[in-house]
Image 1 (cartoon, one colour):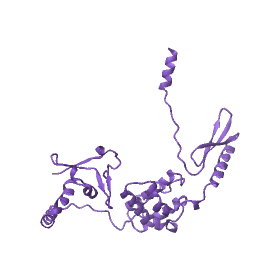
Image 2: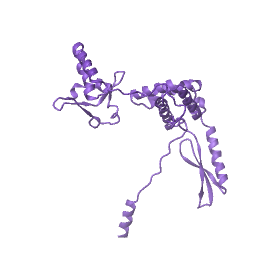
Image 3: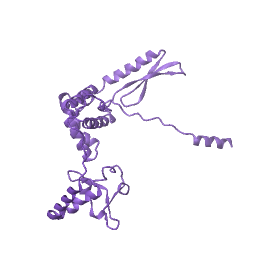
Image 4: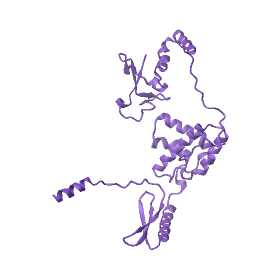
Length: 290
């Protein structure tokens, strides 16, 4: 009976797995830990592959800390030089979208933001090794963009794209940290003085809609359906041009939208808000047609 109870206890015991460390590409020291069994301080560090290592045991804590730092310095000196790394502009143009593919529209937007707002203000127009992109350089870029009187959303969007690039580099160990992480313009920043105010949404008067449809019906009757569909359904342009007549449910007066057309004519599965859902049945968006 006792044997059965012990087996039940073992089966009910929860197992806690240690979190896997991501490779940082650079060695880092850890604080010494006191070993009660031996009465000594263990010198610890993390190697460039993200594994926790030990540099020995010492009587004094400061000696253990010094040994950890010495091991880290020795490993970091053996790292490949910055000249062996791609520069920021080279990685942007040659490898980023191939190594970390996203939707075509997202890739184009990210590249355009970095080319237009980030690279021109960096040293050598961005032709610097990835691991030499520093936080101070990016803060200076932010200041230059504020002097151009750009809006907060424009500047933050550019740094969000750069942060995505550097985050991907960090995930594969090319750089130790993301220098653009969390870099945003504060709403209270006194330098924030955009030359153009935010877009003001305008409701289209009924007179303009009636006039528009009169012209379409008179001169372009073949395109009348194309003009009416986005108005009555709220479809985006990419969804409109990817719509398939086979997805029309005339009895239910419904169009099923599950694809998007890119600017280059490619048809991508999913819509702007459902592209991450794998199954067609789960990402379907139904649009009623009156």
